[in-house]
Image (tube, rainbow, N blue to C red; front, side, top):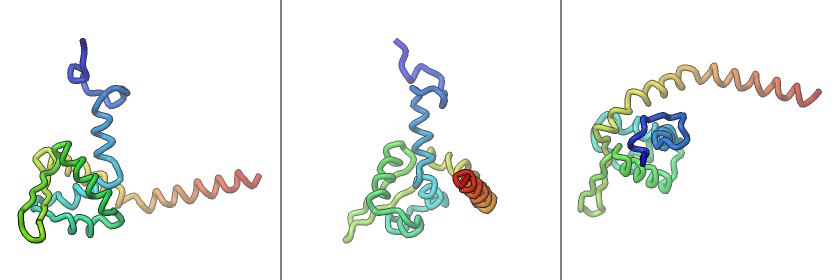
Amino acid sequence: MTTNADLAADILNKDCPSRTVLRHLTDRWTPMIVTVLAPGHPVRFKEIRSRVQGISPKVLTETLRSMERDGLITRTATATIPPRVDYQLTSLGHSIVAPIEALREWAETHVGEVEANRQRYDAAQDLTLQV
């Protein structure tokens, strides 16, 4: 019997588990959290939340748990009052910093061009609807 582990990874194959990995790495928040953790020092929950604007505490908690489950980050709790929890990228997590940084740089470099294309497209759609 062939299992998923026996198959070559193929992102285009609907049964390939690499799809879930890609989906997780490119979700709304993971790339931003990786960017905050990229320098390598431990970062507290509150700092991640303040740096990643717009994320709710619930969604940040869920995303961090998912990243920890995937082995991308470590969570270290220190028994202080109040308790201190720090997050850091693992070596696996650090291996995705460069690809995510490349995507971030591309997005920041081309945002104006993409927005102009969207405006052009939307204007053309408006004209089509008026006809």
